[in-house]
Image 1 (spheres, rainbow, N blue to C red):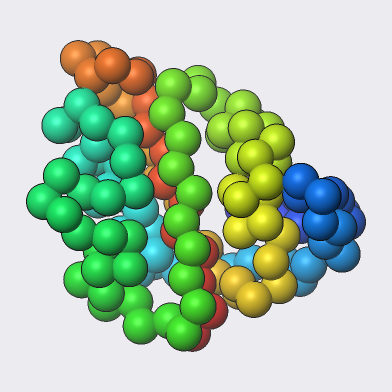
Image 2 (cartoon, rainbow, N blue to C red):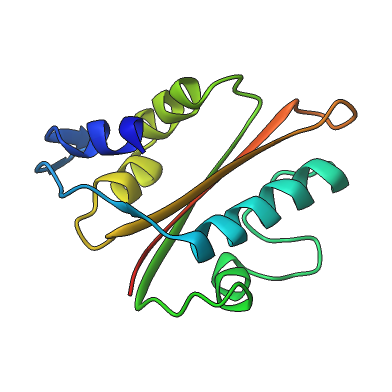
Length: 131
């Protein structure tokens, strides 16, 4: 939470769009459940995508976890050993940075699952929403 909210506390450029500092996010256990499930699925089935191998979108996974927010987004990353390095990658990516900086989102759930047999050692999922 600290790294995410530190990123939001400072105005920044995401691509060519300037974003003002945004209010801190709060933890949501349903968003965490969806994020943990997706990270585990990617690690166990050795793939990297916003779309699950069974065809579900992140919106469908959030709904299945019981999250009924009006605005949702998802960031994924793979291979980064630390949250700091995953955050650096997301901030460097226009779309991921936009998700982190958007004041439209007020809640977050974040998970990392490790695998010793998949292509990447770590699979990160950050789900953001607004109730």
